[in-house]
Length: 140
Image 1: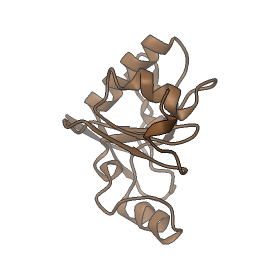
Image 2 (image 1 turned 120 degrees about the vertical axis):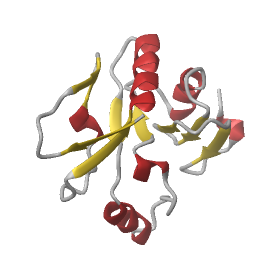
Image 3 (image 1 turned 30 degrees about the horizontal axis):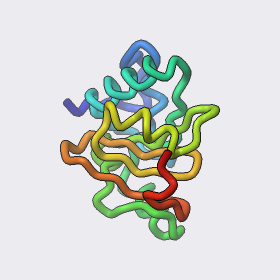
């Protein structure tokens, strides 16, 4: 279920270890925010497995912010799952992207692997792709 909330409203707990503000669009301008509650639940399950904090590098993205990323030449899709609140880019201290992928694939089917981070989203089909010049050969 997609949850809509406002940046102006109070911050609230979405799962035991995740708060709404962690998923805010980082543009700082848009007020409406979207987050898939299944995404947060799966992140909580991953966190419980890892027994350490997960940093949300990017959660929801408004269209304006997504277009800015594309204009900067960053690997952002015009159909990004971030636009629907169904994706997060995450990192965990002490884990490389490939190591984090090995843990996350138990909870997520769609995963993009970077050198020190991963993209996870709630798409139902099994997908894997790579950032930062990594390939399947870099997986643990």
